[in-house]
Length: 317
Image (tube, rainbow, N blue to C red; front, side, top):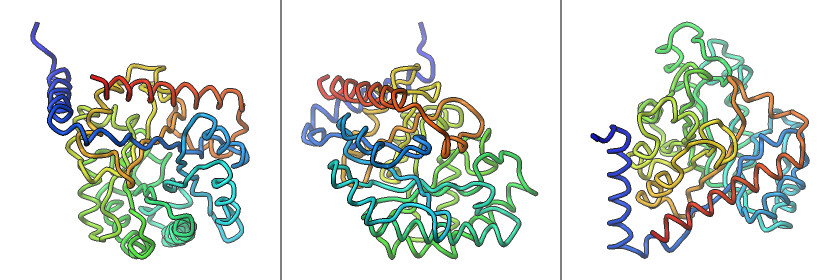
């Protein structure tokens, strides 16, 4: 039987990984950095969230970018104390770009709010020594364009250019996240993100934050896209095909892990970060939801166990 196109792509990645392992086994010695994006934990206290990650051997966290105003959000000293107490490090900050914080808005006051929001959260990231800050070029939960995709793209680029210098100054990678067209109006694919990065033209905004759930519907092959992205990729959000815990769907985790090793992703600047938010068009309500701690415990346990088992299996091939 003739292989399907996705099977051919998978085969090429697996063959390249086999060659890497045979010829350069030292490149597999360091494991991939497993992190977790905590905004899906809702209103749960940070102490409890970090403790859960530590209990499951997860040593990195992507913090909810919750500095929505001068009096709101994480305080660096308090966060650092909690993290240090559990042996966890802040890897990055998940920028939250809603209708009130929209780089592509046609309302100047909203674009200014987005600029101010970025500055506040980059200040937090700098104090905590994070490696990246996630940027969405338009509001999540607004899939329809305001006027036209071209105008939104241009406004978003212009707005980010006004604040892009803070990333280089803080030593933080600005990482553009492509999101599926069911949730945002522009920048849905890695190619879109690269065009956006080129248009912004800032040394501090040169990377991509991938998300396998969005890639599932927007890219032709998740692992091939990762392989092609190479050093541009600095963080990868993980969830299975149903946007639930790894192992609960049909995601080809093995080939994904192989692709990450092929691009040298096992380094101090790059993270694999579960963000299993469940299905739905607008996940942002989860930010302030009341969650079930036992359900979250199981979600983290199942995901971490699946990831480590599959990484072990890949490394032992």
